[in-house]
Length: 380
Image (tube, rainbow, N blue to C red; front, side, top):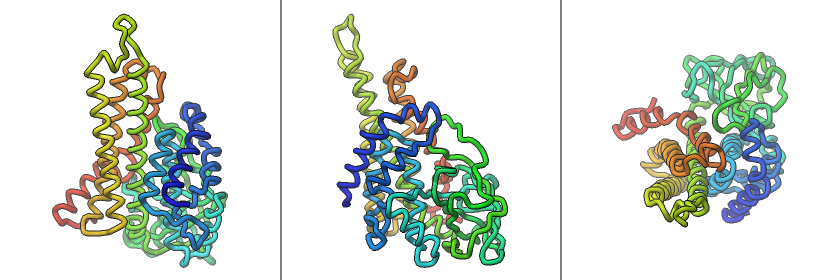
């Protein structure tokens, strides 16, 4: 499967599976097992698994386009997919070091295994790179105790890439990453997920209480470096792609509304009768195209790393979060009562867009990093 085929398969999953259930799943806060199964059957769960391991070996650009296509229909499913691919990138990076990672990666290649990240902790909040939990050495492995927040696909994923301080750590940056299987003794979903947006991605907190894992589950003792260098570029691109999908979705929905809603007494559609609404639609399109160009440029930098690559990776998520909020908000205002009363999908996309700004690293944190990078100040 090449890049073009991957995107077309994502669109087909959107048409045949996601479109029929997205609104109901959002309303009820239901995680879509059918969506995960469809993505697996389409080969998309193995998008970035190397061909030598049975996957498709595709990179960030194909990933961004696939995520965008999914998010145009259901942003919650798109976030489930983003977290999966980021987790798989860890499995790929450390498969040679961890037998458990290699085993999980083989299952991902078959399309039967969903993975996710478990980084953020209540004690360090949006500073996901700084776990406050600390692993303990135990017979044959490690004992983990942690309270993880914002674990997408909580209770549904087959494996979780979890961070924790190493047993002899002196600071949160002295951390490791482990792969933990679903059903591990001591690991449980700690609370319900009931948010205003992204309601069907099961992004609930999870707790680990005396969770014993074998030594083979340790991916790396350089967790801090891996979270920033292995995961963050893929996550920021993925989150930006979700934002782009939301923007494209509301541009399409707004254009459709302006074409079909009418002033019968004027004998004209809203779009024909009101130039201010046409101007709003134009602004939405301009901002959406600008985000698409920024995302494509970031992918180019990841394919050909240079001195500006880190800056572009930081910028793309910050810009995407703000753009998605502005574009979806303008769509709400342009479509008025039809959007407010949930007669269109715009209201759902508007709520989903809010998540980008608060999802770690938050826009405020990214601006701090960007400012430091420009001034040549170390980020940490």
